[in-house]
Length: 236
Image (cartoon, rainbow, N blue to C red; front, side, top):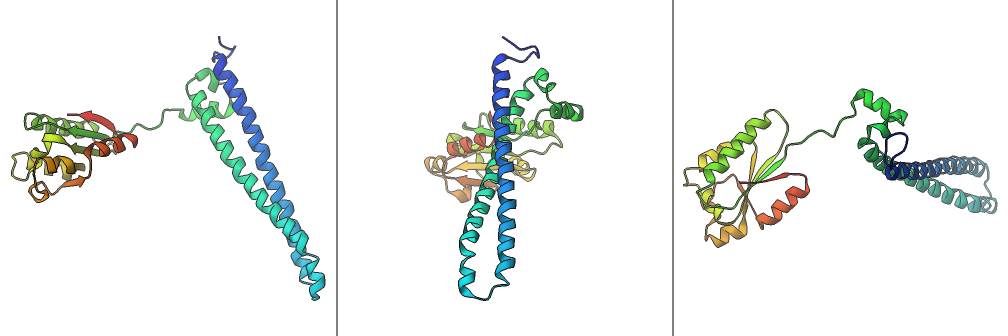
């Protein structure tokens, strides 16, 4: 079921709820500003009056109102921070719904303006992690794929990593015919990551491997962490 605006009933209800929550957050923000303004006015008045009093007993009269005003100031700052945080949170959720529906965006003035300026998807990124886990039968293919990827991405800003695990670690020795090609790719920005467990299982010493490689405790954990950061996983 959809509304007259071509937006699904569920999304329309979500929008209405989020807008209501955003109005509440806006009220919280305004209350915080009012509390801060009021408490700072009282504190300023107390400071002016206290500067004219020399008797310690008379000064003690200002302690209670000063304490209350300070508490109100802190409370006002809390309301301002909470109001801004909640408004930003609801704005993100609203934008997610508006992004998926042109009809929904047309209902809101600020998104119509954004459409005219170009309401586009977030900029594409080309960060990629290549996973090598085999022996020399595939190392040539791996190097070719990485080289092709670098050429295809061209001038785009990106990060690329080659994570080597398993028996593929033997292909990263200094004396292999592929070492020079991998060194050249590293000079172009390829980050080469070597699995410590694989090195130990192959009974290799780190000094026998290409110096561009960075050894990590676990290649698999490195793959998980890179994918969590948004890297595309490409098995080679």
